[in-house]
Length: 125
Image 1: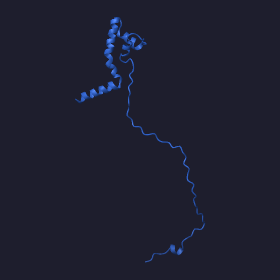
Image 2 (image 1 turned 180 degrees about the vertical axis):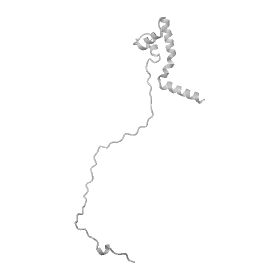
Image 3 (image 1 turned 60 degrees about the vertical axis):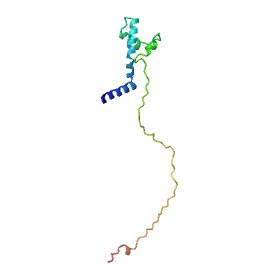
Image 4 (image 1 turned 180 degrees about the horizontal axis):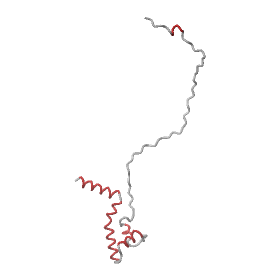
């Protein structure tokens, strides 16, 4: 059952989203060939294909039927592919001016030293 469901769903998808739906028009091609065969019994399938698909199509009595033959004109399919694109990176083009701040620098040449007695004192018990 799953196999037949998969085949059915794939067939619906393939016919709907590709040019395989043109194959459904093959009976029109056969009927049109039979009609041409009745009018001209010497026409072959190759000549029929050449007249309708290779040569330039003149606007004649059966022009509308000629245009309904399979693969005669392209169908426009709208294919929407879901895709998630990241948003574009915003570029900022303004200059940032640094804040003006005055720094105080102490430049004293006198560095006070601690008293020698307090620096090297033995521990008391």
